[in-house]
Amino acid sequence: MKQILLSVIMSFVALFSFGQCTELFISEYVEGSHNNKALEIYNPTQNSIDLSGYRIARYSNGGSSPQFLDLGGSLASADVLVIVLDKQDPAGTGTDTIVFDELRALADTFMSGVYPGPMYFNGNDAVTLEKTNGTYVDILGVIGQNPGQAWTADTAAGFTDALGGRWWTKNHAMIRKPTVSAGITANPTFFNPAAEWDTLGYNWFGNLGWHSCNCTPNSIAEVKKVNDAFFYPNPVTGSTFTVKATAVISSVSISNIAGSEVFNAKNDQRRGDMIIPASNLNSGVYFVSIILEDQSIITKKLIRK
Image (cartoon, rainbow, N blue to C red; front, top):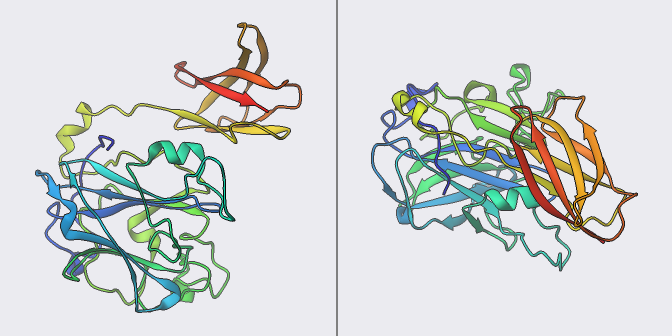
C-alpha cells in the first residue's frame, strides 16, 4: 500500500456523515477506457483499521440488488488501498482487454475479475463502501437512480446527463476534495459530483496511491510523493506508443542496448503524457528515459516487437 498525504475537516453533507476523520471513505474513482477501473479507499483516522468488516458494492443501472466484494487485511492510518479491476493477464487472453501497465503498477490488490462484479462500474452505477452488516460507510452516486450514461454537475437536469451535461463518472477519474473528511452514509436524493469531487480527466492514474486531506495537516510535510512514469503498450507492436507520468514531462529519449541514443523529443505541450513514434525502432530492447519538469529522470525498459 502506498503512503498518502492526509485527512480532512468537514463533510459537505454532514447530515449524512459519520463523525469527521473517524471512518474510511472512497478517495478516488477511476472509470477509464476498456477495463481501466479503480477505487481508492482512504483511512483518515489515527488508527489502523481491519478491513475484514468492509465490502464494496455496485448497484448497476439504477438497480437495488448489488454485487458485493468483501475486503481483507488492514489499512494503516493516513494510508490508502488501491483496488484495480482484475484484468491483468499479460497474454491478453480472452475477449477482455487488460488494464494498462501504469494502472496495474499502482494497484494494492486486484479484485472482481469475473463479470458482473462490483468493479465493473461504467458511469451510471452507484458504488458504495459498506460494513458487512449493511451499514453504508460511503456512497458514490444515488442507489436506485439511473442518470443515463453518467452523473453530471448539471443542476437543471438533476445532475443526470438528460440535458447533455459533461460526464463526471464515465470516462473520467475523480478525486475527493481535501475538505471532505467523511463518507456519505445515507442514500442521497441527488448526486452532484462537483460538491465533493474534483475531476482528473480520462485515463489519469497519477493521483492513485496517495491522498491529500486536512484531518492531520501537520503530517503533510512528512510525506513526499514519489513520481513515476509508464509507457504502453509494452511490448510495442504499432507505429506509436504512449508515455505517461505522474508529473509534467519535459522530454523523452530512447537508447538502444549499446547505449546509443536513437530518439529525443521535448514535450512542448507541458503535459503528463507524450505519444512517441516507433516506426523507426527495429525489433529489440530499448531504454526509455523520461525527464520530468523538475529534471528528475526515470528510465525503464521497452520491448519493440
